[in-house]
Image (tube, rainbow, N blue to C red; front, side):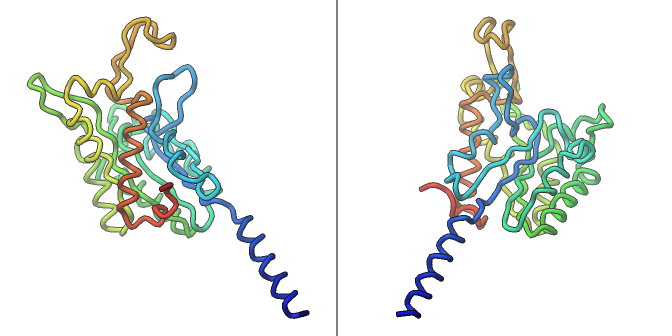
Length: 248
């Protein structure tokens, strides 16, 4: 009887320990396409805002550190990256998506050439995440909406997406190729209908944009939702361990 009581106590202890296990944290490191938006920017929406709903919050917590206007270079310089690594624990994930602002060669505070500084910064991110026994996941930059006069889609990201793919392959890092996935989505919508995914407003349609806006980089709520679905679908078909925590 005594041994049975001991076994019951051990079982209850293990149940309590399991119940108190902290959730896996998925840190988002990126730019404005991923970032959480302030009220005065709505209906602009970052796709990272839509990710939590696909996971049980008790098992997986999304922590969005993405910021408007940041490149790999400025994210490091402003200690935004350090804020993530300071909190990382074993088993956490870091989703890393940059490129839009690394491309800005006119701005030395942000510019990172694709096959030198940009790749080196990505390698730094990966190395430091792995040092904490956490899991890095690379994402290629989202497509901008751009069609020529004949309705043919045009890529504006140059060599940056391929640089991400190269780093992912060389360092055996999981890759979510949002560049190709978002291109397919935008092309499927078409030159005109793809406006539905982006921050496109007529004058007086929104109090935040009284003069209207035609933004082909940032998403509205629908666009952010569609982009998040693309990422989740890719996670579910990948070898990323996080997939087992997706809601059915």
